[in-house]
Length: 79
Image 1 (cartoon, rainbow, N blue to C red):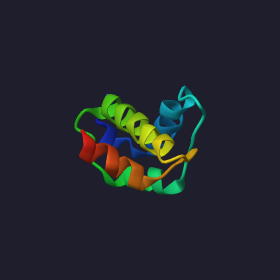
Image 2 (image 1 turned 60 degrees about the vertical axis):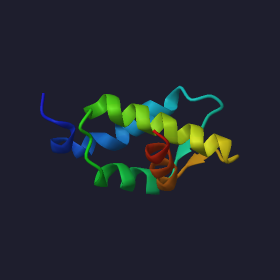
Image 3 (image 1 turned 30 degrees about the vertical axis):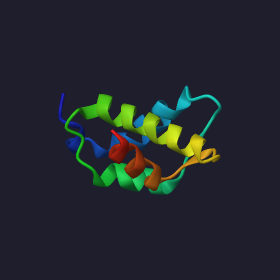
Image 4 (image 1 turned 180 degrees about the horizontal axis):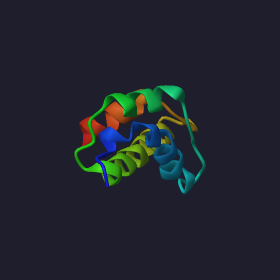
């Protein structure tokens, strides 16, 4: 299977998949997809899913139901 960096067209699908089971429900802002598309994912899909879910937690703590690209950056710096 090719690296995720060679299959960037799948990233929006994986973002939706990662957020599907987050409760209470959250949605992805386009800035989240943009941030994910610009980042290298050395852990592949597992890393993407884990970090998107961590970003969703950051958004929820901020009282939002929409996950922003800046939530991803916050989740990465907190790791």
